[in-house]
Image 1 (cartoon, rainbow, N blue to C red):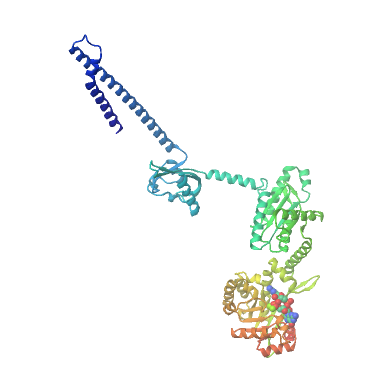
Image 2: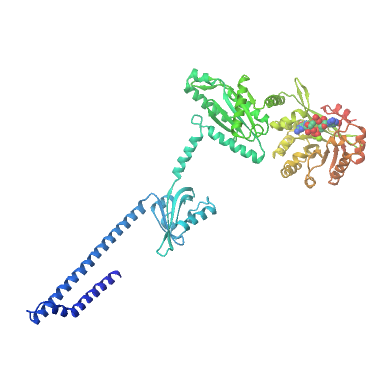
Length: 630
Ligand code: C2E
Ligand code: MG
Ligand code: MG
């Protein structure tokens, strides 16, 4: 087009010059002083001049045109060169390139694209880049990206995509919108590089920054971070936990006598040993030197924290072999509880540290709470826990039985099994003193199973009794395997299931009513009876009670005590009896000490009674038991 127009231009210029010569040539020759020449010569001269001038003009024009052509060809060549270079770059670059049309259909990808994503060109042509979406970014992320493109025609940032093999990976991406002269977007070009390797080394760096190189445990930085999170969690969920600092006693001497190399090995071995004694979820860190720290997040009570501290101190006691030499170490622990002792990390660590100082000054190899009164209490409770563990092994537990009578005829129909601890020094310990502790430490499961088994064996000796009741702790009741344990004991002892009654407290049922209901149904399928103990002290909903497969309600003794005066207790007892009966349940009143109470209850229609009036809890002896039931 431009070629044609320049040819036209040349022709026109020539035409103009030739025309001008035809019209002006004669006048020009007349104006020149050519008097001596003949008119033919002048005519000839004019034609020669015309030929010369037009040849000159033609030459100038053609030359200009030729130069223009050369320039154009050079330009074209350069352009070709650039394109060739671009193509080489496109093919050889390490960065993936994707070109799509305005409708986001992929029209071109390079080999690096295939290498990074795993998709061949023919697999993605005509598709949209959505095939690469990882699902890791939300709508807002993509919205922000398109907003940037609309505004600046480009976006760059980190984006997670999915390879053909399903793996997701991070890439650094530059996305550009290509527009034509009219400003309409015609193409999109994405250039990206796979940064998963960089990310990986970043996480390695991160690991190094937050871990102790010697023991491979989290370091102080990570520990502080974890405690911060734990405090935040405790604020949100009204929960608590414990932070402990454990310091090795006289570690300096080991370093001095055996050398730093042995010292390092020892620290490493101690780190491993402590870790092995902590369950998942408890953080162990090395703060530096011979100082370790523990974050016990779901610690329910000071006793639990103390038990863990004791465990760790015990764990240290066994000799550690370093360079074929057995080394013996001990440690001291300072404990600080949150949120009770402190609400910030610094304060918690400071408190644990000052408790640690106290432990060291108390002669080491011990633990101390930041609050002194906890130290004494926890140590006592721990001693009791250890003694209770031994009580089972050493046969110090006893099962006592208290008669249960039919209130209408005074006949003993059953008995309740009640646990006692025959302590070598303290004598007979009542359950009120050790059952709550056993529940806290989890020992209750063993105790209850023991009581259950003893009671089942006892049943055979008392054929005249309709049933024997055994208490089941809420702790044990919360376990779904209770029914299989009961089934096992029944099978082992040969006891008749219908003569075994399990007493479950109202609160155990209300803790998780759905799970309790399910468990109760399974227990019923075994054929055992179920009673709700201490009824009236919990918060049973009537709707729940209606669904429960229980056969008996045991009215708590606190209501029976107030029966004499016609106060609110009478009304409560009366309504519990009516309610129980309307649901088809038997009702038992506990703690009957006076004949008037028994009489009153009988009038109100209560079915069974239990209390000192009929007999105190006694060791298993059939004669004693029937005597007590008078
Ligand atoms: P509980 O199941 O409500 O047992 C009734 C408690 O009332 C028994 O206390 C019993 O000795 C006492 N008692 C009975 N008659 C009278 C009376 O006329 N007057 C008074 N003041 N008290 C009376 P005990 O034996 O001290 O047991 C206390 C609680 O310990 C039991 O309450 C039960 O919840 C728990 N317990 C006892 N043995 C076991 C067991 O083997 N496993 C579990 N999980 N808990 C047990
Ligand atoms: Mg009971
Ligand atoms: Mg009771």
